[in-house]
Image (cartoon, rainbow, N blue to C red; front, top):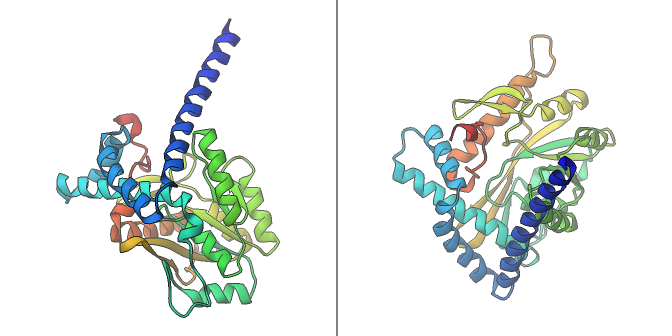
Length: 309
């Protein structure tokens, strides 16, 4: 009887996931009937209205109150609306990725996408070596590995699949066609990334998510757990580490930035300081988020407060 109930619960959960996924796919299919700019603008406007009505809004607002105690509630609500618009655009941009991504490193003038740090891309391409690039869930962060590929770089990217397995499968297929090798953040992912660096390859990582077994650090002055994987990989391979980010610009444009390699903190014996390195990552991401707060995903449970709401 217990086995039957367990299977029934699993079947119901899968059914719910399947229905949710079909609804999402139907909306995306409808968007394809519109010109790209019109479709993306429409979902932006709709999301700014619907997003604040969803359960995730409560978590987003509590995160904003903790991160920006000096701001008014109206200012925090405006940031949340920008966030929902950014998230809707990100989803719609999957549909029109081939049309939107017009980056040509040899073009005399930029199109929809401009790049800052082209000399770094060129150096990494012309002088192959292992390196790590890290980013955060800002702007359309999915464009970064595609841009790297446009410059002749193949980056093995670590990513966290969505909880819905049907949505995760669709996104994985879409990413795999343009974004190089992808590694889901499951057991064994660290070994895959290590092998990539060991073979002289490049690794990309998102570093702004909660990690239960991480090191204790601070983000916006509040305690968080941060994944130590980047620091441990750097300690093992002594490779360069580059910050990179995506910034959403007006009129549907983007600026992709890769910054010079950061200096990795070390202890008194010259070894990589894992905790200090994790803190450095948080500090860099916080700088990015403060510059464009509406382009970060505030509904992440970064401070592990969901259970208190």
